[in-house]
Length: 339
Image (cartoon, rainbow, N blue to C red; front, side, top):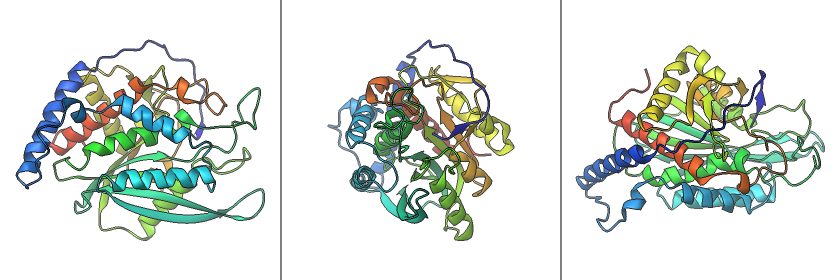
């Protein structure tokens, strides 16, 4: 998680489930997708249990815990290498196309080069109009906001693993996602390779955005959505202020929060939140990809040793994942979307 620019007060902590309607809608959407696949000779097994057709917060939370068990994952570390291999293996098993985007920087402490790598996971790569869903997958080198141990162990359960875990579970539904729009998941390295408060943030997304402009791919991204810090056990998601201020992302925010309202996900709060300097900024300002940030910044364990799975929630991951899946399905069906 990058920087918050303006002041913030604590939001109300009331939690609301409100997901029963969403389960019904998504079951119908997946059933339609399966029928469409059947026409292509790819009918999913009728013996598949109903639960397999629903976004599972428990499964996503299992991914989150498995990532954290790798330990700290700052850029260039052994933990990062293990996590990268886990992500590549996971999405390769889902028959996605995985592209590595390497780059290097010099460590500000030693001057030595540090190898970094964004990962681009593509579903239905033949579709030229695409949506980008993103998360950073590195962790801060140290929990520098910890009042007791600012150089202790930081595993980044919410700030680092939560967006990755949500996308790992969401990926199960992408091969069967019928419609004209392709989907890319992009995992950014070096979002916060920061050892000094003056160090730059968002190096991976800056590199990605510059490459998108200087060496354009054959496809175009209609919109992007960044998932960051989405597993807080007391989840509340106001609308990040950049995302509602930029004219080309305001409609995207409205669409996603409307989708959340339609399925009863009241954790998506339709009021302005803080301004956050996150990976969506270079995507939009450099890459010209209209991108919003879904983030719960009211998290007391931010950049401390207590950002662990115990302070994250399967229910929160499920809320975010189901809203995103509903929004994507509605977008493919010609509902409100990029304008």
